[in-house]
Image (cartoon, rainbow, N blue to C red; front, side, top):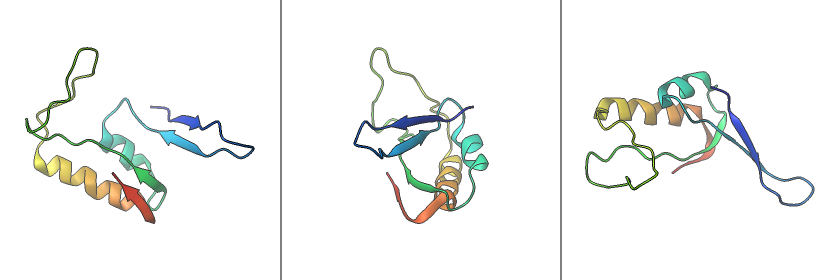
Length: 87
């Protein structure tokens, strides 16, 4: 997977964001160095408590265990900087 860098069209020194998508979060997170992520945004499975599926959207795995979700969240915390945000 190649990360995708997005630049906001704001002024002479615009902020950038590197997006990682298209593969398992576990694979992506293992490739990131600790203390290197300022912000992570994720939508974990809610085991039927929320419905996101509508026409034209991608269906994600619904068989994730709570242990797998916990592991992803722990990896996000490890990759995050101390002043970072997890949404």
